[in-house]
Amino acid sequence: MTQPSSNPRISRTKQDPRLEDLRSRLAEAEETIRAIYSGEVDAVVVNSPSGPQVYALEGSDHPYRVMVERMHEGTVTLDHSRVILYANPQFAAMMGTVSESVTGAEFDRFLVSADASAFSALVEAAAAGGHSSGELYVRSADGTMVPVRLSVTPLDSAGMQNLCVVVSDLREHRRNEAILREERLSRLILEQAAEAIVVIDPQGTIVRRSESATSLARRPVLMMSFDQVFPLIASGSPFDTARIFSAAHAGEKISGVEVSMPQPDGNPSALLVSASPLSSDGNELLGCVITLTEITGRKRAEEALASQAAELAQSNSDLQQFAYSASHDLREPLRQLAVFSELLQAKYQDQLADGASLLIQHAVDSAHRMEGLLKDLLAYTQAADAPQGAAASTDSNDVVRKTLPIFEARIAESGGRVDCEPLPVLAVHEVHLTQLFQNLIGNALKYRSQDPPRIRISAEQIGGMWRLCVSDNGIGIDPAYQGQVFGLFQRLHGGGKYSGSGIGLAICQKIVQRYGGRIWVESELDRGSRFLFTLPEKKNETR
Image (tube, rainbow, N blue to C red; front, side):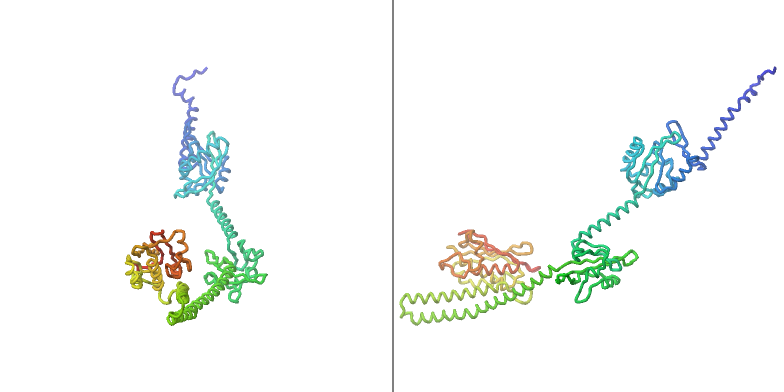
C-alpha cells in the first residue's frame, strides 16, 4: 500500500484546480471591464445598492437595439437615479450632441428647470400605472428649448429596475399646428370680412372669397372666372383680370379705382376696386387679392347732397336778391313816405287839428322804424358772408379803438366808462368783429341802470379758441329769458322805452357761429350782464 506523501508542496498542488479557476475568472472579469472602458464592448457599469453592475446591450437583444437606433423618435434608458444608460443617435441629435456625451449623464441635465417636477410626476405615474406620457421642454446643447412628448415605461433588465423613455420632437408638429391655425384664422377673417374680397390664381379663377363677395355677385363665385362673375367697367372700358395682372407684373398695386358693375335690375352698382399681387419667395406671381368696396349708397347720397347744395345755392341767391331788394327797392319808397310826411307836417302843421298832426307824426316814425328794420335785416343776411381775399386776421385791440368813437357822445352823456384789457389777434374778418363789438357795447350803453355805465372787455385763451367777454352793470336779464335774446326780432322790453329792432344779438350769434364759436349770456336782474363768445385764434400772432 502506498503511503500518502507528507510533503506540503505536493498537497497544495493537488488543490490548485480551484485556485486556477478563480484566477481565470478574475482575469476574465478584468478583461471585460477593460473592454467596457475601452469601448470594445457596448455596456455601462453603474453603481447599484448591491455594488457595481454591468448593463450590456449585446446578445439576444441586439435586433431590438438596431430597431431602436433606427427609429425616428429619440430613446433613452435610465437607471433608478435617472442616469442615462443608453441613448440612441436620434436623441443625441435632438440635443445637438453625440451619443458618447449623453451616455452616463443625468437626464435631468437636459430638462428645462421648470419642467423637472413635471418629469418626476411622469416617473411616479409610470411606476404606479406601468406607463405615462406628457409634453414638456428639454434644452439642447446650444440652449434651444425643444418641445417634446415623453413616453415613460418601467423596464426590468438583468435584475435592474430601469426606465425606458421615448422622446418625440414636437417642433415640426407645433409648426404645422401654427400653420393650420394661421390658415384657419386667415380663412375666417376672409370669409367674415365686411368688404367683398376675392383671391384669384394666375388664370383669373377665384380660389378664395368672402361672404360679402358672394352677396355682391348674388351667386356662388368660388372656382368661377373673376371676369365672368364681376363684369366691371371703368370709364367706359372693361376693368378685367388682364388689366389687374398687367399692373401686378409691373410690380404695381391698384388702389381705389371707381368702377361700375351691371345688375339684373338695370341699376349698376358703383364700386371701388383695389388689387395687390401675391408672389412667392422667388417672385413667382401666385395670384392677386382683389377688394371690391360698394359705394352705391354713398354715390347716391353724394348726388342727393349735390342736388341739395345746388338748391341751397339757388336759395341763397334768392335771399341775396331779396336783401338787395330790401336795401334799395323797399327802403326808397319808405324814405319818400317819411320825407313827404315830414313836408306835409311842416307845411300844414298850423292848419291841421291836433289829432291830424299826431297821426302824421306816427306815420313819419313808422316809416323811419321800418327803414331801420330793413337795414338791420340786410345786415343779418350778410352777417355770415366772409369778405374775399386773404385769410382772416384781425387785431381785436384795433377794432375796439375804432369802435369806441362811435359811442363817444353817449358815453360822455351818461358818465360811462369802457375799460379794455389786452386782446388777441383773431382769425376773424374785421367787419365781423366790428359788428360784434358795436352791438354788444351799444346794448351795454342802451340797457344801463341808474348808475353810470361801466363796461369791461376782456379775453381768455381756452385751447385753440379765445373766449371774449363784454360785461356791464346794467339792468340785467332774467335767467328765464336768456335763451331768447339771440332770436330774430326778440325784444324783452316793450313800450318804446328802448329803441332797436331786436336783430342785433341775432347778428352776433350768426357771426360767431360762422367761425365755429358760440355766444351766451350770464346775467341776473339788476346785477348787470356778461356776454361771452368764442372765436378762433390766429396762430403765432396772439398778443
